[in-house]
Amino acid sequence: MDYIVELSKIIKGALAGDQKSVSAYTELLSVKLEESGENRAAKSLKALLKHTSPSKTFSPNSLNRPVPVEKDNRFSLADKTDPSGSVVFMADRDDKLIDSFIRYINNKEKLASAEVPINPTLLLYGLPGTGKSKLAANIAQRLELPLVTARADALISSYLGSTSKNIRSLLEYAKEEPCVLFLDEFDAIAKARDDKNEIGELKRVVVSLLQNIDNLEDTILVAATNHEHLLDPAIGRRFHYKIHMKLPDVSVREKIIKYLLRNFPLDEYEYQTLSQVSKGMSGAEIEIIIHDYLREIVIHDRTIDLLELLKRFVKSLNSKITFNNENKSEEIKLLRDMNSDFFTGKVISQIWGISPSYVSKILKGIKND
Image (cartoon, rainbow, N blue to C red):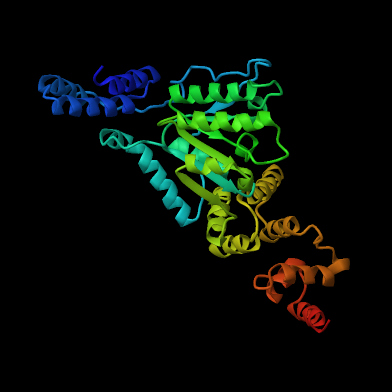
């Protein structure tokens, strides 16, 4: 049957409530009809497109289809959430890559019309706390779609063959529902098949996963892992976009701190001080310290004490530093080892509340040692 591919895509999109997909394939069908000399039919389709106003693919209350559950224990295979309010801060190079990914998805109609395959897949890898989950939510928010986050504890079953069935069930759900499917802890189901420690069943899971990803077509898939070296080599070919999520540099740390303290404004020097002292921290670690501190000062009706907050960052970076006066010389040495450019004699004197001359004496003693 002529045009069966286009018609099936239009029907599939209509059933899923994806108007963008319906419009794209209707436009493609009109072009093919015109090329075949069926001008009247082509003209009718174009008229329909012209008078159909675009609508959003998602509103928080528009998706009522339940997420599939694990067959044996009836655990939900994923959590579906509204990602509104998600904020992330990234290096410029990564921001540009995400912008490119978003443009790619938003122009899927043009790609479909040109018969260019659509494969909106993104792999995030890097250290814990670098914002992989936040970025997945931010992408869903920008695309005005719900975030469907897979639950690894429910996907992976002790019953033979059930894990593959769970993965297939969840990915089939994502194909039918407009969403961003987020597979966190991706290495749990995508380990390299040459790993001698893994049993045959888990290797079959990887094969099933690869096959199901290949069948996703235009489903938006974001996967994340802290252990990219464990992933099967074939995984890389399934993800067209990849981002190495690194620890934030000083400029990104300053943006994170300013956002977290947006209701407790400081001056630029104070922001810069906190962003410098937090060197080596992940965004999640910075968030935990600031939120813990803010809870305390709000409950006790206090204002922000920069030195107190500074000390909390230092203690988090090095548990041996307690700001105990009895170990002053030893702790000052540890501070200098941490970041000699930042912890100058002036800064150290302010932290400990001692005179610059006394600090200078201590530092000279350290140097002479």
